[in-house]
Image 1: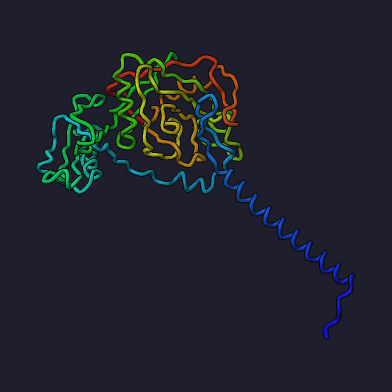
Image 2: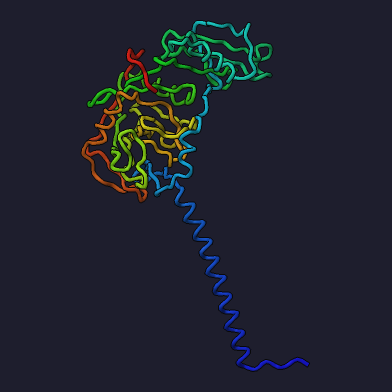
Length: 348
């Protein structure tokens, strides 16, 4: 027969059970908090504050495997817009030239560039819906526009069976972003962000761009060097090294831009915040932002100093969605102007 436990033995067992339960509870709490903080440390903020401004920033992200990401080869873009037919002079007739995809058609256009950077093709049109295209399925028309900054649109809409795209050679597709501090020349990337670039080309046709302006300006501080490289062991902001504004002109109806090509943000990158019309020009290499923004162009290296000048203008401090930002005391108006070609060698 088993021996009956005394009250002292029962007390000892009770204390032991309570101790084990407490230890297990502490371990569970620690694990949960670790997961939460780890997720927060990798968060890049793109939100709207109570006053309707977009916020770009981070929460002290640690860049993991930075060297590998720097060496990672960016995707070679070749994108177009569905249900759009571009007109123009044909340099290769689609009735005699068929391919399997819009990307192949785009690559064929890219392939018509010489060693000097000049290209005999700057637009392409592809029919890729087998049912809708019928015998024209696979046709790839390669064309040359009279003005690369004002492409001839034949038709658009859901009933259009064609997919079209633009491609700019080395010294083409450059527009000016004019401010009172100078003109920022921007190389557009239509093969990577076609929807974005077509919107910029629409702004280019306006006689004015009232409403377009920079309203936020933050220098690189001591966190990035003059080449835009992050200083080892420094924080990631604020300040974040950027100038931010809006490209919604008065009298126009802005349609949200779909997410397009999102490479690593580099010094000079011009990108949308969310779906626009808010945008920014980066003055630093932001590997910590993990390819989170559609990039539709880049400021020419020789003009980046104009953006740096704007980042040094007087600002006032505000807090948007718990992020400290520097808002310009006086917004900087801007408008796009036509620059058909750059006579200087581009270093992109």
